[in-house]
Image (cartoon, rainbow, N blue to C red; front, side):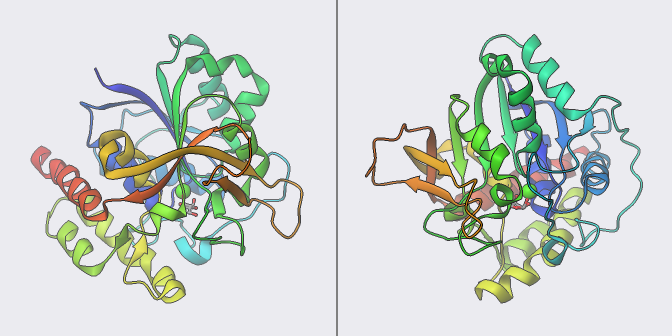
Length: 316
Ligand code: RIB
Ligand code: CA
């Protein structure tokens, strides 16, 4: 029985690959809806980009919703310097056939979770958690419908990628992240500590390009663009493939090592706003509200990604 999921994202090349990985896995994941949020680029682009990926993957019937266009409390920040002005530079942008649903994403999330049987829907936030935080604040009762949350955000050993102490998704909406991480439902948090270890090296991108189908070509093109900034910044050979780690965790939990511990979000300090204080060594008595991902089989991750992207060729 496939797991029902809602993917909440801000495409973003890595969000796009997470969408492809989920769309390639219908036996394991039933995508109830894709909800877009402002993040890497403004909402009108993230929703368009999500719909573009549905077109490219041949999944034009997937419902895509536009959500919050600004964070819950703080001023917006974006990341065009990493993702390009379209948010998915590396593929040519086009106006997709996949329609944008009329309902606001937060309304879709609330209505879907209130109607769901208890504990049956998995939430996969791969951008700022504004849509989820807003939904939970508006209607806490939706949490009964949530089986678990697998999020991309935060950092412990890796430090910050947008400020010295904060990862982009959490910094972009720390108040929403605080609501989500303290909502009481089971959360697996994929932070920079694992995503910085799944690097889209030239060899790995070449393997994806060799698949020779439209989705793989789009993926290789986006990764070819996406890595230029991080390679220079970290001196690494390839950009970290952040968001697909969430979907990979659901498909192959064995690829990741996690530890139950407390994650608390800094929502006040100007200096460290968005910092995720992960009590990995249990030095406090704070509740263990997340399973923090701290190790990953990077080769196994890319084996999975290549195997699933190859499935789009079987369709052609
Ligand atoms: O810090 C990495 C995260 O921020 C990824 O989800 C990327 O897409 C951006 O949203
Ligand atoms: Ca993202």
